[in-house]
Length: 116
Image 1 (cartoon, rainbow, N blue to C red):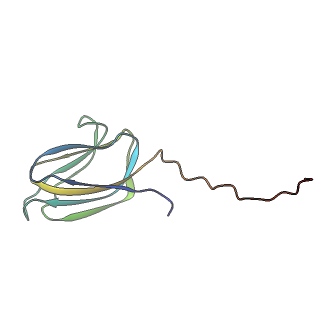
Image 2: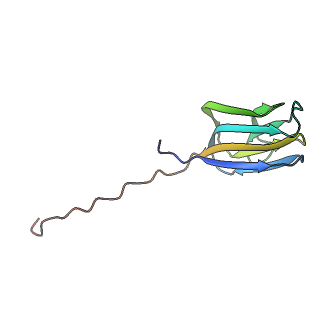
Image 3: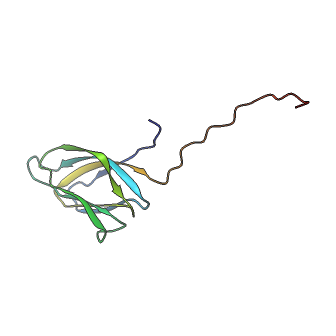
């Protein structure tokens, strides 16, 4: 596949966090969440926007290590903002900016006849 997927690991160490992941329109492909203490649900909320006033696109409370695949991906038109509580230990998110330009092929070296 010819697409660039960004990943980011955020270690929270028992602190609530407000994390701006991306400022542009993006697609979220997967999320892995690990709470601090086994069977103690931590909360993760993902918003479409630059802060928690954006549209809520995902809210989950994993009590153990969980991996979420999003097929089709979650579309965020404004950006990706993640809010977690103090019971979340670490999360990893994978996303692709929508405005990423695919690499253009380089013109091949073609030798032309001088009289052409």
